Image (cartoon, rainbow, N blue to C red):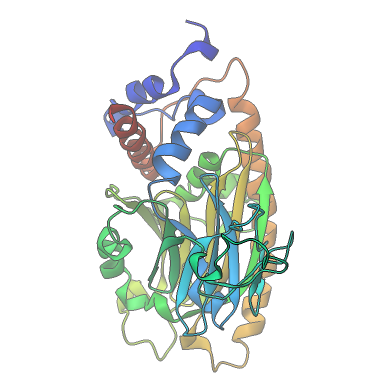
Length: 380
């Protein structure tokens, strides 16, 4: 059968049927075909929770961020009561999108005809509508989207039946309780688009096998393969850990942190919360990627990070973190080069997946998650 006629879901089914000890990377069709992309939007991004960032990045009334979730424009905004709301980002008049990007607004004003909504989504006013006898301002309310906060992260979903975030990720909360993830403050937030499939970037984060090579110019020399632990994943997430030394002080637990003991004080968790929130969590700082596909060949990236509040009063901590951010930017350049090369290779006619290393256990578990979602969609 010609490659472009292979059913990508069936190809993934055959791939994930193998035990981990014999597993190969996912087949190219899973990354490159519009058919599989459509399955992902319908059965993953329209059904599971998607992270729009940190709650402290939306700290004040009127602070907002926007996204396109499985084709639905959504805005998340802090209302005047201090609550986070997710709303349809589509005007109820002629259906323009309303807010763009991330910022602060006193009200939500349509850029087309200036219909104006309060921060709770109710219609405040609409110019030149008095002569329409059917118009009643009180009948207009932007549709609500489910929104939940968990350990400082803000999640939304289009699925009214999705289990609560805290329920799905209770094991993660227990595992990193000593890090007190709620009390990390975001210091930067950016958005990027790379020319690769979202899963290529997700998998790149999930394994540290590539660090000595892809990141030879930055962190590769600090990355010891023998110190990487890759346990089997769970239904809603996978993770692996790396031990760091005190050459980067802000990666260590602060002296005032009595919650972590022994090697916990220098353990970095690399958490992959399905489908696409990827968190590097050290006792002192964190950074994250939240991914959404833009077709098979592009990924939209929400990129942010900051420090544990344990370091808030240290005079040199912010400069140390600023230096770290410079390093992270260089690491991102390397990752972009590697992941765009992978997608170019995947798109070639002679691409064939090879066997996985024991250090790529999270990639295997990610494939199992993907298969469970698209298989359930096909069965439905």
